[in-house]
Amino acid sequence: MLDLLKEPVLAVQEFFLLAGGALRNIFRKPHYGDDIALQMDAIGVGSLPIVVAIGFFSGAVMALQMAAALAQYGQVGRTGMIVSLTLVRELGPVLTAVMVAGRNASGIASELGSMKVTEQIDAMRALGTDPVQKLVTPRLLATGFMLPLLTIIADFVGMVGGWLIGVMYLNLTTRQYWSSAWRALEWWKDVTQGLAKPVVFAVVVALIGCFYGLRTTGGTQGVGRATTQAMVAATILIFVLDLMITKIFV
Amino acid sequence: MPERSDTPILKFEDVTVAFDGEPALENVSFEAYEGESRVILGAAGSGKTVLLKAALGLVKPESGRICAFGNDLTAMREGELSDIRAKMGMLFQESALFDSLNIEENVAYPLLNQRSIHCPREQVHPRVVEALDFVELGETLEKFPSELSGGMRRRAAIARAVVTAPPLMLYDSPTAGLDPITAHTIMALVIKERDTARTTTLMVTHRFQDGNVMANFRYNSEQGRLELARNGEALHTTFMVLREGRLIFEGGQDRLEASEDPYISRFVKHRE
Image 1 (cartoon, rainbow over the protein chains, first blue to last red):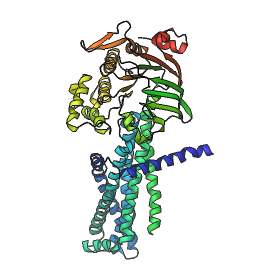
Image 2 (cartoon, one colour):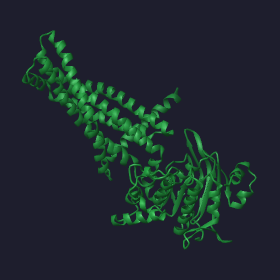
Image 3 (spheres, helix red, strand yellow):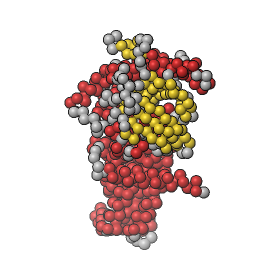
Image 4 (spheres, each protein chain N blue to C red):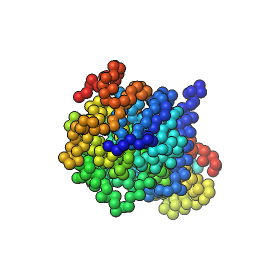
């Protein structure tokens, strides 16, 4: 029994050591500004099209579904409120994080995993560079900065999707939709929650990707395994942490 | 060759390295002196690569002590090892060039990142060009590793290892997977570096032929090629044989060739 537990416990310890090292390095020299900019481009700009598409269709679908439910109570006019609350509190942060996890946690794991199995990580250490400082911290900072921005974009585009449905199919006026959507949002309960989540999810996506990448063994097969594991672990953690953060705010 | 100094440049004292409880090196002890060449023979999985990585401080031993340049690596933390590693050049088995950097950036990497190498910015490019000329790859500055052949990647990796002029060179199977002509080119570079820069050399290989070249040939800088060392010329080459993590032989070529151990004689008999 103890032997069975040993490996997961060691893995968790290894993960927290990596997280501690990466966070500590934010305040330590050298800082790799070029790498941070490169990762921001790959994670942020690269994920923009998919995040915009997912955000738009989520908002549109929410508007259709909620309007049907609200019609039973004669409250179709409140569609904007429901769409904005659902997007800002839940769908925006979670869907964006899951998309970025699918694109980037797996991408980071495969990139670092390939470097690990071809001894590039060892070469980096041999040539005087801390791989955590050079590879993990820039990815953590870039994801931490870009994921909240992507979430804000997804929230807004989602509301636009809901507005189009409202105007085209629900006979809502533009003013009616947007004033209902805007007034529904409370600073602490909704906006803070909606921005705290992507920050936490960003840490998970970046660190899980780096963690599985850096512990890759077993050649190209190992890289494939690390990629899948990173994607699955990051997605599960996003939902678990979502529940925990929601409990704090609700 | 320089006179043998009294203090070893690299010393393993009863070193055991294990992964998941399985020993990769077991009670290995040896000393390498300045100007000496060591050829480490062994089958796949015998611990050759682990030995080199332990010498660099990339893997920590379970027990025993590793000293390099008078410093106990086993007592040092990762951050403190940087200065010692700057005195060692390592050629990794698969070259380990950084895919995302071109050859110039790869070779410049140690000059720009080793804290103890204080190389002024304006000297980086000339030194990179010099190192690439040394391995006869002066025309590949802008190319990426994926654009080079296996032999060229190995040569570029040698350029990266020697660009800081380290006194100790570690080669991990420099000729593995190469055709005989390219393998000879690589061995010529290994010996050229040893003889022109007077470096101490540790070379891991599974080919006795590489060790034979290391022990008996010298680089003629006037003619730009290898030649058989003259009788009595001291090349200070020691052979070591690893078997399942244990050091089972340490000595000169004559003793190695005379060994009746079936494992050892297999290497000697399979000379190409």
